[in-house]
Length: 131
Image (cartoon, rainbow, N blue to C red):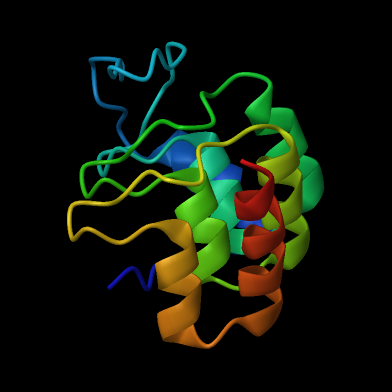
């Protein structure tokens, strides 16, 4: 399980202090070139874990919304798992892929379901019915 805990103000300092993977992430989803930490997390993923919407908006301009880390997690999955409805809504509105699955076969909605995050589930269901 993803239990990493960051504070909004420390998130980017932590990312700066972690040696970056020398390669960049490119996936079949046509992600932009993104700097990642040693776990494959982009700045957007870290901001989504914290639920810090201003950082999410800033990071979303540079990082691909649908980039996946080494475990197949996306920014939307992190926001859903950590119960950040406003971030989930922003990412869904920004056209993040709601159907992607992590390496364990779970999508953002299923992660929210297993954690009991009803508001996140309602938001995702609203966008899933539009697709």
